[in-house]
Amino acid sequence: MGKSKQVGNHKSGKKKHIAKTWKTKRRTKDLDQIHADMIPGNAAKLLKQEVDYDVTGSAQHYCLHCARYFVDLKTMKEHFKTKVHKKRLKKLREEPYTQAEAERAAGMGSYIPHKTIEVHTQQVEENMD
Ligand SMILES: [Zn+2]
Image 1 (cartoon, rainbow, N blue to C red):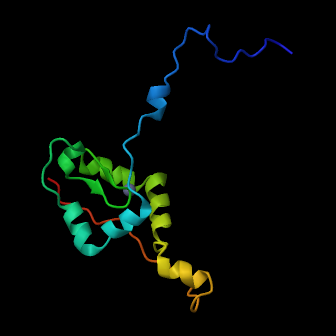
Image 2 (cartoon, rainbow, N blue to C red):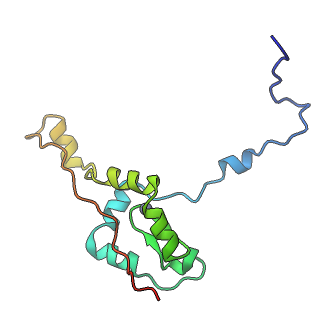
Image 3 (cartoon, protein in one colour):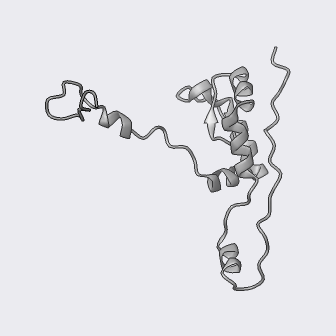
């Protein structure tokens, strides 16, 4: 037994950054919202957004599957290679859970197994310069 572990108390000079930890870290979309975004019509709109200077990269580089904006094409491409993005694609392969499916699973009607869908990283324009 060495030193007794002192748990933060009234004496501790360090301020705990509770406010910081709890700050909503720019909440990302839920998977079902992203599924909706993946519908071609919606996707096209999201991938070709109007220039918005308040948004990272002026909203010109958007990863559809992660619902994230990137500063430039290079950064976005780098992101496509990351684990986060690949994991996300995997997750998105499962179709959103629908009420109809819940009912089938509960024995109402015939159960149709969970379908998986193909999800690929969006195409990026290569001709940058
Ligand atoms: Zn991504």
